[in-house]
Length: 230
Image 1 (cartoon, rainbow, N blue to C red):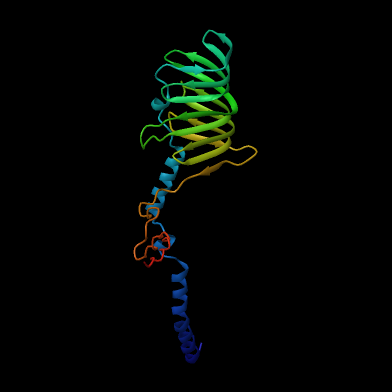
Image 2: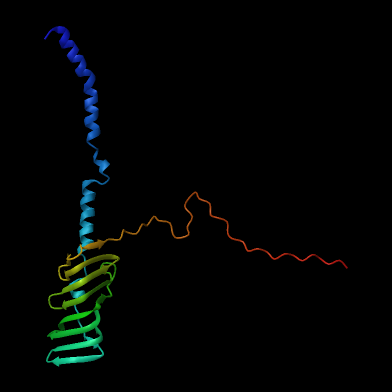
């Protein structure tokens, strides 16, 4: 290559090099451009997993006292098994089950297995503090075994806890290890997670900083009658 051509090539490279470097810098966004540092994203993912799988502890959900059952009638009773129907309610110190029909089998140490059906059947737990909020569940069939702490919700299953909801054809959760499994059938599993409360949000009716409150409404005054002259 001649000296003239070498000088022209060097000049061309010098002219386009800054543009190439600038393009490379803009194509790779800084770490802050993603909005969340990797450590914060991992923490957020862990918090989401905890909320999805968090359920009452087994010792909180298991009944520890007597079980009271009310129903319109008892269809059959045999040993430790019984069938109840009509406005059925099963209440213990921690749980309440209700539905149209209950098949109950009792075991030692106040343990039991219950199959309750309804349109729908319900289960509720009052909760105990902010770490163990109240929960509610419903389905066409609800199977609960206090020995294994397994609850199976079958048919239009729905679980609500602390405002978060899970809807599926079938929901299984194990209270002992705080795990939940939702299974879709004709429709997909649907989970709704409520956002955390915003401590900085203004109270209802509060006026934001720098804003002027609207004037208070005034009541119209009654007309004044003219003064009579004597």
